Length: 336
Image (cartoon, rainbow, N blue to C red; front, top):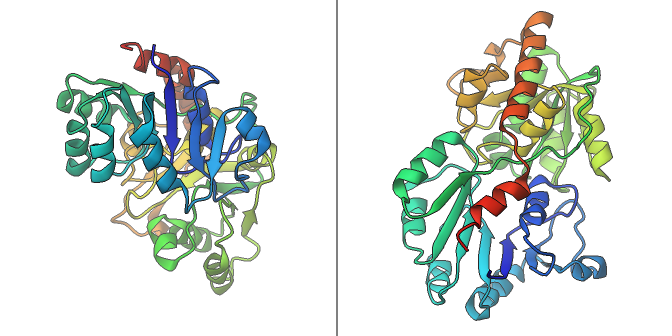
């Protein structure tokens, strides 16, 4: 069996869901994880991480390190990425060793062509059933699996909420990012409906966000949370009625990890129709889908009985569909 190297272009150990997935994917602690840290206070090259064979480089250095690793290593490569790269394709094709890629966003024709051009591609994971079926057609000789994120927490006790929404994703610091990622839509909805939201921050780029909050008079309705632990994040989720994701474009994961975290706690989701998971949410009645062609003020939240039905459907979906991530990875690697 090949040893494996795990490459990811961001990492925050223990508190960020994709990073937890990367650790869970390892077949052996001898397999190194190589990444970079630039959010949620991830420490750079800390001794505790290095002892666990996890190498977190500065953001500016990671592209060089990953290029050197791909060029000179002989181990298999599991890359957690979404962007096609001509340079990486050339380097990955230089050596006969298994290559695995985990995808999280929508799959474009350019990305499919990139995957088809990887000579030693053995396996691909995606997060929506629709993409799994599509890539199985496009890549008939590749092991394509749906690998959904597991909830951040094991305790899934449902608590009574004291605020309406929780948003936990990259907020982005610029005006463009705040619009595209749906943060401004959340603010508009809270303003129009007199609702409240906790925004769990991923970085310190909050200057523009604070300006929007102040300008819209939402100082008492919006709380910004810089979490110091997974426990704090769980409290924010448990105190919300809904997990909310209202991006204007599919710039985030098709199945946002925070939506899974919320469903596991009995928190229905309110998400945008541009996300790949929206169809499943609608078909399985576990949340509300906002049509991006409509103003957010048109969103209608259900009454008490309707909310309870959404809660129940979401918990049932989690029980039916979420498999241990490590087991899915073993299935992915079964050929080698």
